[in-house]
Image (cartoon, rainbow, N blue to C red; front, top):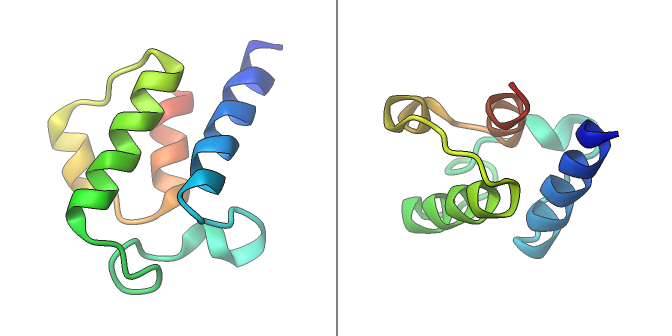
Length: 76
């Protein structure tokens, strides 16, 4: 049940940022497809870390290019 609660929080944060996670949209590139500035991507990551009380290593944050990658990091 914990995984479901975490996914619900993740979905809510992405929704607040206007990012759709259904279908192929979860593979969209933050900069190319979603046209998000790096500052907003960092804000999204911070908000997700805060909501889930988890922290992602800085070197892993640099490699995140799409929502699905971010979700995988947070769920592991």
